[in-house]
Amino acid sequence: MQTTWMLRWLGIGALLVLGGGLICAQQGGRRSTTKVEPISQVKLEVSSPAFKEGGDYPIEFTGDGDGISPPVAWKNPPKGTKSFALNLWHIPGQGDVKSYWVVYNIPATATGLAKGSKDVGVTGYNDKNRREYDPMKSKGPGAKEYNITVYALAEEPKFTSQKVNRAELLKSIQKITLAEGTIRYRYERGKKGGE
Image: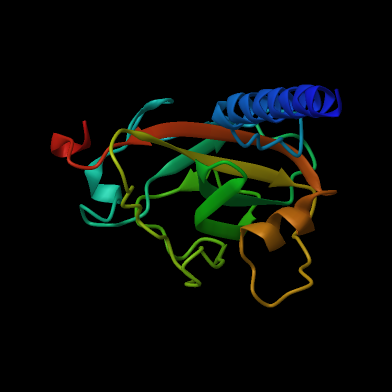
């Protein structure tokens, strides 16, 4: 009698463990993506003469080409804009954001950055700990999506660290961002001409 009850409880325990494992496996199999919330809901119009929204990134701006920074343009900033900041970023995986280019203290009179721009605004640190544009070389197969976000600011940001990277920039502009806009593009290594 005691053995029968023991076997029943062991059977129930095994079913519970097996069921729990299946639920965890199903949840683990779901792909969760990182969502980057905008700081401001007011839209700034951002574009590039070199590529279209959602289009392919020209190879000249990547590590497979000349590796120079792309031209970026913006228009219709809100009244009271005193400066602009820019960040080129990518989500390589769940819970992760990689930063390739940070520029801040761009004058309020600017309507964009030219191709290979180095003398407008102040260049911050990329994720390779360098104060420069980092031309991407995406790893793994398939096209990857990248983003260039421009922020219209009510004043020049004040930083708590001498090392201004993406995290420091976003922290400092949290309360002074009047508007923002993002242009997205794709890049796939090995695709002829980046097209």
